[in-house]
Image (cartoon, rainbow, N blue to C red; front, side, top):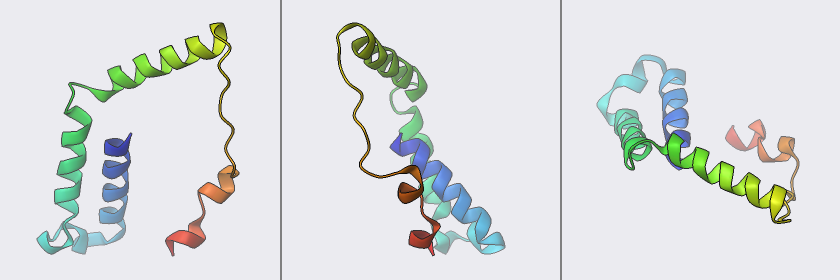
Length: 84
């Protein structure tokens, strides 16, 4: 998840900077490359994420595990005020 987040965040930042995002001193290309390496480091993280999700849902459904509740609402977690 961290690799996917790094790629998405770096790509968005590079796009928002316009032409300046392509320059070497912005380092966005380095971050995007690191993110792609993290995504493919263990083969394909989607396979691992699918297995973990399946195991988690099985534990919730059959073994009585409870899904943790967030202390914050979605709007509190994703606030544009923190970004600007």
